[in-house]
Length: 367
Ligand code: SF4
Image (cartoon, rainbow, N blue to C red; front, side, top):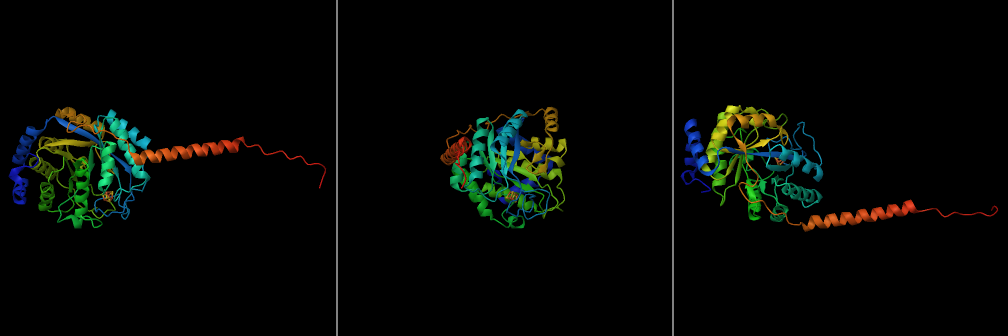
């Protein structure tokens, strides 16, 4: 049962969302125990592989080039440094690495080839690899899948009705198409939203309705609370109460019994008790590490302490699906072969120059 048959309409879902909180949490906890091990929580790490300078205008995002925030545009990280970070994350208990690039869309260029190599490398480390790279077409999704991508993240963010108040540079339909492309390529879908952006409760429920209407809902649904960043259009939004986060997590859990509900951005504003209620209500993943792309997140040691107190255990990689096989990527291999041939040519040319001895000219007498 991927979708709860009891809450298939907006009215039913709204009624559920508005239930007395403890009843809602109890119902969510009951559903959670039927489909998941309530003691297991996945630790995922989020790594910004290409920060800032994004052409989009998502109103909550400090990485949009048009907003004056303290996030500077950077080049894409090297494959080696990403793999080093992935190894560190794994040593610290993360079983999933989500790599984010501040792109409007994936382009078929050298940077995307690097992402393919990163995905191959992280999959080889036996970690679940997730990417969030903006919009992508079907061919690009297939390349990622063949590289060993486990999941693709592309959030709908909010309801279709409220979407235009948040983003104007692309349509809701564009987002749905990218999710569809990931799905067609056989990649597990991670898609969720952000609450606290000034939306109505109906929009929170509307977001969940968008997932209800899909043939297959996302396997993973991250729930974020807005982190209002100075310089963005949402800088003045008041932080939401943690009860709202708990309510959203619980409603999502009940509506999508088999999906993984992820407690994502905004955790720094929650008490341990608030987070405990989220776990009780069915959240079974957190992002570990002190940064979530560019916003603060609780430190690793604090999380470990919380796991100990609450009796939680980190979930192993590939508990919710088989490890994807990494297949050779023709485009990447051709580029590497070309670069290797070019490097050899340069080396030979350099050796020629170094071995060159100017011919000695002997002058006889004077002209
Ligand atoms: S959320 Fe993503 S697409 Fe939107 S501005 Fe930020 S980096 Fe760009």
